[in-house]
Image (tube, rainbow, N blue to C red):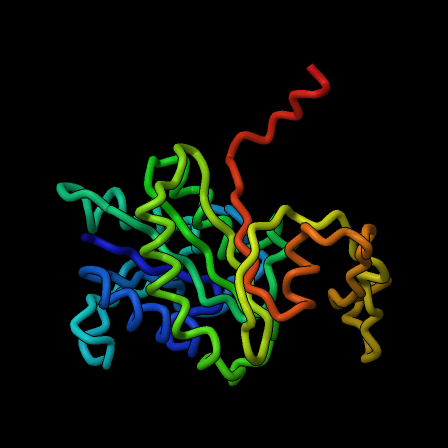
Length: 247
């Protein structure tokens, strides 16, 4: 089985390295990742800028092929499909492990999930993995036993066309798994003023910040609830954004 591993945190982070190693248990792994952080890029593609690809020869990823690009996570999928696998089939695309939750509305912004949605559009089965911590040294050993096992199970069950799976893990011990839907919520207080002196001619400046507000805290079937109760959340997503109730 040909497995492509991508992420949005950049090559060399703990999440993608662990994910790639675990995926070698299931097949031949090709890693293609951005050369730096691309968090929040969603399914952004490099429309105006040329993309470049470089192979990493020295690594410890159990025989995987490793490439980096100046492109986005979505670009990584396109490069893999059109160039690296031009004459071969990609059997699975796995994205992550993202450092930071991609539950609820975060999936809309996520480069990790953006890559999965692009893969789904290409007809490639795709799974995104995230952990609920932005710390680059977060303890991943509780999640490790689930990576290959859950991935294999989802493949055996089958991934419907034009869909992907968004998996979010709590930090610490994982006490089980739960099929979930996206939590309804929103971000508040998203702009934090920049305290330092602004460049000449600039009238205001901000950094992204904010607090996530759960608009349905009593619901027990959401991805947020699952993580809050030390459960691995598995949410199916689709590239069809049509709201059929409004037709």
